[in-house]
Length: 118
Length: 116
Image (tube, rainbow over all chains, first blue to last red; front, top):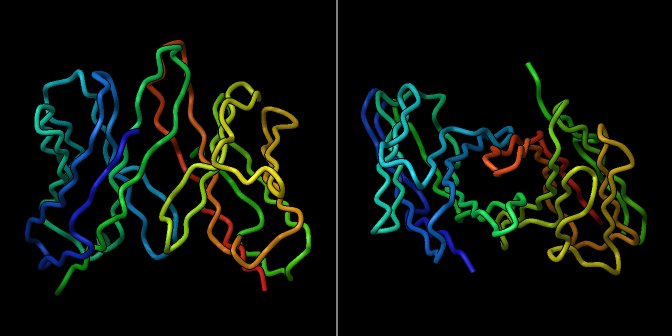
């Protein structure tokens, strides 16, 4: 079974600074997808960024970028120029690709709570 | 701006009562997922559907939970009878699978359920 580990329960960053959230995962599959979701106090789960395992290029989305290390099974999220609105829980998630090609579930990490300080 | 909608947003009920949560997936999406979030267990999948057919409901306590998709625009999650341990936030998510699954799941705002 796949597992996703987020070893940082809480992180803090100064406004306008850069912060990196860590995520590691365990899988025996070669094709899969990785995601970072943000959950603000409203509880809405918001997709931040996704990465396909077959792509070597790291995904970027405005101020958000990932460092995907497939061999190390590591998928960290970098937030540049942090803003107060970035304060939230961040969940790393894994989705495999079943042999039959059907959709499969997301496996989530336990989350990292990010605080943004003035 | 297409989004997943869920009703109700909040539900407080007494133990033993029936609870029905509804989800409207994004129009055109063909997969629907139900997740539950608790402090102890985090986010866990309860069930998911593709083209309205249940693909996996192994995460769901069968004796009291049931999930259905009466049509492509409505998914329901029902708990009968409810118990205090069912108190959680229930998320619905939808996605689009076209042959090879490359879907991203888009989450609704969740239903916060409190069972007294």
